[in-house]
Amino acid sequence: MNYPDFFDEIEVIKVQDPLSNALGVFENGEYKFTYLDVVKSAGHSCPTVAGAYIITLMALKTLYPNERAVRGNIKVEFEEDLEDGVTGVIGNVVSQITGATDKSGFKGLQGQFSRHSLMHFNSNINASGRFTRLDNGKSVDVIYNPAAVKPNPDLQIIMQKMKEGTVTSNEVKEFGVLWQDRVKRIFENMNSVVQVEVV
Image (cartoon, rainbow, N blue to C red):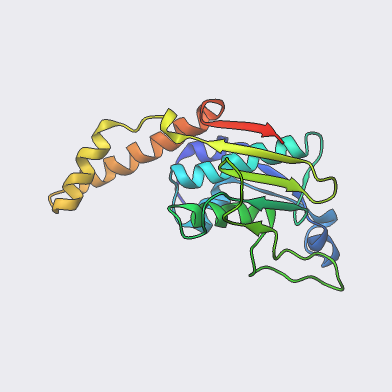
């Protein structure tokens, strides 16, 4: 399986999952998510998928500074509606990592390990997302602004040729390279595209 080399350089997200431990899946319920994991689930790598990974990474590092994030112990809120723009795409990535879902998730085992009703939309917040620990109530707001990393101007030219049906196979290949170059630069400039605030 071939994919851009920079995927392997992105910081992984380490979690501890009590449900996984209880069901004998991973020892101590400990495992990790990589950017490649979420790309495979999403089917693509783009500034939106990258942003969802980044805001989750940064939020969890703030909420769990010296320990693994506890999957299933995190409530996530979005300002937008589920069907607005790319909110659904972001929600899917965040859900994969945190376990939080709206109504479709696991309903629990003997009153424990519930994952549903932990993700909310149309919330009264002013951020890309709010992440809250259920055990201590600590929350962080995360704002993601990919516009801080500009795309290569050639992308727009090639996109126009795609629309017109005049694009060549070499240009399609170049488009993919330039597209992933922007994603790479977003990860390289995380401090410029993301703000985290404890609330």
